[in-house]
Amino acid sequence: MSNLYIHYPYCKQACHYCNFHFSTSNKGRDQMIQIMEKELRIRAKEINSSFDSIYFGGGSPSLISPELIASFIKKIKDDFMTSAEIEITIEVNPDNVSQDYLLGLKESGINRLSLGIQSFLDRDLKLMNRAHNSEQAHNALSLVKKYFQNYSLDLIYGMPYSSLLDWKKNLKLALNYKPPHISTYALTVEKKTVLHHQIKQKNVKPISEKAVKEQYDFLLDKMEEKGYINYEFSNFGKPGYFSVNNQNYWNGKPYLGLGPSSHSYDGKALRSWNVSNNHSYMVGVNSGKLKRELESLNTKDRYNEYIMTGLRKSDGLSLDYIKRIFGKTYAAYLEEQVTRHLDQRNIFWDGDYLKVAKHAKFLTDGIASDFFII
Ligand SMILES: C[S@@+](CC[C@H](N)C(=O)[O-])C[C@H]1O[C@@H](n2cnc3c(N)ncnc32)[C@H](O)[C@@H]1O
Ligand code: SF4
Image (tube, rainbow, N blue to C red; front, side, top):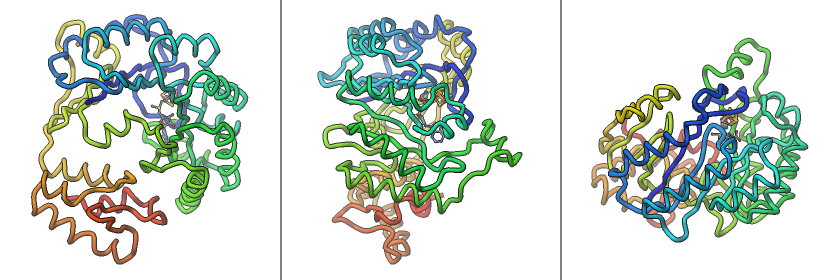
């Protein structure tokens, strides 16, 4: 089982915090889908298992017409093995939502929507330079709820100027819709973004790490109270609604990424990524010479990656798996490294599985890095 990821690298406007690969120019937009289909045909030999998830991400794939999405999905299903229960997700920006659009998506074969709400508060949305306001966020979510059973929404916490009360209000507004899945991300100030510049110039003041942790800890409590399972650090789902795409990714399954900047992994030791430039990408595919870089992962890299993804999952990481896949020396190394965090009760053994305690979850990435082999 594997994932197919399709990166649509265009957006209406640039959000101030975002460093994903996208362009706000329309250059090449009309040909992009066709070229990604061509890339898929060129790379067909890399695929040796059936797809159980297709994910249209970006950028803003909700700028693609449902008709084009439908024909892309049909080509994939006609030419490649796909599982009967395949999950097909698209990331949707609220300002692209209308009843006709959603009906078109349903018809195209899309069966899961990820709606980029980010916040219901206009102050946050303005600061983010989002193309939608809170009224559009509510309207979009009401429509999505009406037409799709399986959907998720993205929220960003830790926004500059946000109080715990603001975050409580934001989350309450989201939970009023009883969505089956929510992804929440702590605002990351990425280099070369407008937000980074604003903070450096002292035009925007970030909140403290302690205040961000308070927002995350509140989120954990509230989501638990409402019956969601925090199956991964940033992801909360009702039973039966965990994302197949996300789970495959964290469980080390192969993924094939199409489009500029997309990453691929063969499920063993080979990772690759496409050039992050639309024109260069298109020229490469058209000439049959894909512009991408390859990286071969050694055992140490794969062990470190397993530690990171394993600790972020509610299932935790398995010592037995480490013994079997990486060898006894790696298992012994881990057992030696964990003592301090075990003593501090930041982590605990649940049988063979090492898990992060709720009070320390916010620190997960830091704890994981203490177990890395450098
Ligand atoms: C690849 S983005 C694209 C989705 C879609 N274009 C949108 O903006 O709604 C996927 C998600 O990553 C999150 N994200 C992107 N940049 C972030 C940042 N700097 N800090 C925290 N979350 C971020 C947002 O929640 C966003 O919805
Ligand atoms: S957050 Fe989404 S809409 Fe905004 S620039 Fe990034 S990819 Fe585009």
